[in-house]
Image: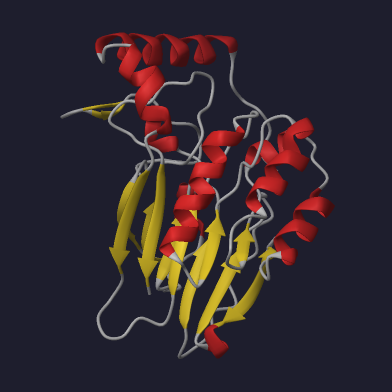
Length: 262
């Protein structure tokens, strides 16, 4: 498991960069508009008839904003996906786990998820996570897989720990999807080709300057900060997340639910 490695200097530097960018962006917009301006991004994978339609969101970092998360859940339900994937970091403080899980129970499709580093760092008990995700018809996957769509799709969920075991149990003849928290872990999967890798963690940098990109991203992101990338392990999509870290600021980096046809 990864442990917190933010030095005081790095933390202050991040706050300074985000604060300065927020000021350049007009401050009020970056703080009060974009953090809750949800984007529904639609991506079609491959050609031919899709096997499944899935929704992907990540990095909720729930801090008590019920109305916002209820709006996110309602937006997911309007898209009527076959199933939903969550990429980790449900909370930062474990006191918010019950309420966050209660809100996600409103998703009207099987919900599958993996832990993020903040789920570990908060020392949350994953028992309630497993129970809540299973109650939707989905599951909480920690180096586990499940077969969906009558066996035509396999979903592998990685546990966000250093003891990642490879190779993954990919299924020949099926669509193979890998759900993980850290984008840079695409490099740890070798040359096994999956049809789609899903990751979060980066928040897209939260502040993106046109022509420059993200100002700062956390560890285990590397060049995979937001959007679609081609990797030796297959196409990787990095979602910029739903919540925020350190500062409630987003600029040119709206929170996102991604809808895939696979």
